[in-house]
Image (cartoon, rainbow, N blue to C red):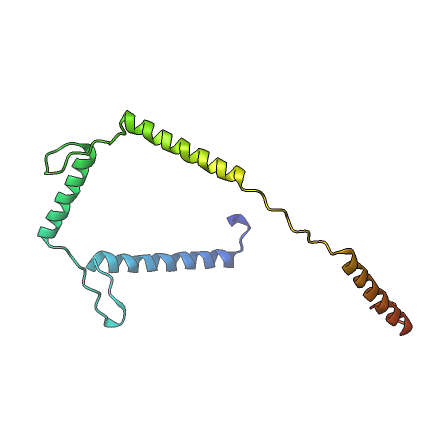
Amino acid sequence: MNITNLTTTQLRTIVSIKEQIEALQAQIASIAGGGGEIPTPSGQEAPKKRRRSAAVRAKMAAAQQARWARIKGTGATGSKPARKKRKLSAAHRRKLIKALAKARKMRWANAKAAKPTKKKDRRSSPATRAKLAAAAKARWARARAEGKTRL
């Protein structure tokens, strides 16, 4: 927006709008700055803010500290030490590998043994095609007798 191209009436309008904005901002500042609370419309009471008791806040803080101590692995706030990761023994790992190999062999044997079913031939038989052709010829013969060029 170039101010040099504006008319005097447009400039006056801009100045009056800016003055209105400044007046409204002053009103907002006096309301919010003076009392600290913005009044609710039509005399309704604002809902009461729920606050937790000091005891509950202390319990929450202790629980959070314990969680952080457990994560970081520090502090003696009564937290349990982190569990050691369980590992398979070498003998059990070999046993599992053998069982999986056996299951794989059985699955492949079953897949090879299952004969693929032959797809059903969905084509019409020659007799059925002949019947359909005869019916179409009869329809066209009737249509031509009536003088039609389309069915």
